[in-house]
Length: 582
Image 1 (cartoon, one colour):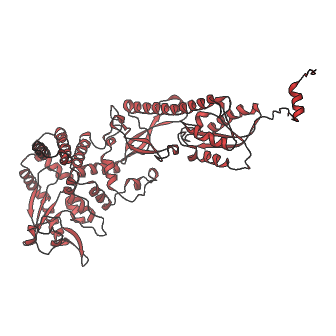
Image 2 (cartoon, one colour):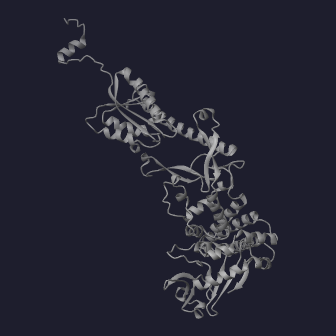
């Protein structure tokens, strides 16, 4: 007969020799804490660190947890993977340390620490080293075997990503509205020619109480004069590099040299073609607030490793992302008409591709010697520009037959080398210019300009019409060729170029002023704008003379057989010129 057993499990444990330990609750133990805040400009790191670590303590201390190590990233976006965050990467490296003083990690807020799928990439690494993860949003420890926990952390990462995108959209919408409605300056470096000044208390009462002030753009007159000159030189036919070389020659400080405090990332090594291009393409010089021309784009650090995350690069924004104020927001440096003409000219040049670039007047190379007539003298035999050269310590301009294309018809008449001494030309040239603009001869010069121009300033219109007609004629020829059986793919590039030139020419015709008669008052005003020509000639400084020659639009032709220079100048009036020889 079997005896009745009151506690079968205890008896079985006794038979098997098993000793059951009584459960002892010592609490969670030692933990490390991790937190993050984005930027010091928009968030107080100490306050952010305080409330995140405070939340973590309130979460684990009732469970017997003690925080013994802190890891806190400042200025790190949540979208940056843990491996690329300073403190987070140090925490991951500490996982491999067998002597670390903690065996679990707690966070103050999950959405601050993980973004997108980052948790699914990080959690297995903690599990591999036996480190538990305590997340307040889960209400306890993350259990990798619990599918609900995995789903909740996935949702948490999605919420973090969504929150970031919503904040970005709200901030951008608010800034757009401030620019469109108020023309408010949104910060950043002031464009060259402007300075930032105090604009009064901030319209937000709370920010005003904290001492925040509005910032406005005001004109820096010396810089603004350089900007006006850049636009004028460009519309007169000078290219970006030529303008940069001219400004460097005259010793005008470039933007990074003028304001090194706001251009610490620049070398202050003089004007560059890219600097001139940036000024010519900046619509803020019209006095209207423009916002959103450049935007941050997140690009994969390594397309083959998506987990490596993104890096931020600045790219030109699409036109639909750019906003403009309804009214003028700050003093203008150039008129809207001048800026528009410059953009039409740039578009027209761009449409021509390399063919247009080869025909354009390019800037001079940087040399130790200043050649006053560089780019102004052409050979009368081959009509090419004569190059500056130093011969026996003197400045010369030369044209050599060996640089001509083999088989050229002009080789028969071209001397082996054509040399022209600069000092001889400059002396006679200055005498001619001084005579033209002497007070006693100004009336005669004005009459010559009006007679040469034919009383009409329709040159811009006529040039645009010629380009439009040429582009349309080429398009018709290409269409006829396709109709005759030519493969369309063989002419597609040429057709696209002709179409782009046609669009640019039509836009220039639409935006150019109508033809009109030039008055003698306008010519007198143009001559007055040149300043005291006699004083500049008497001063004879290379920079001043070079600037005067440029403003007069001098063109020189040297005829070696006649030993004569033919000079022509068209100072600022379209198609108007005074012809004369020395």
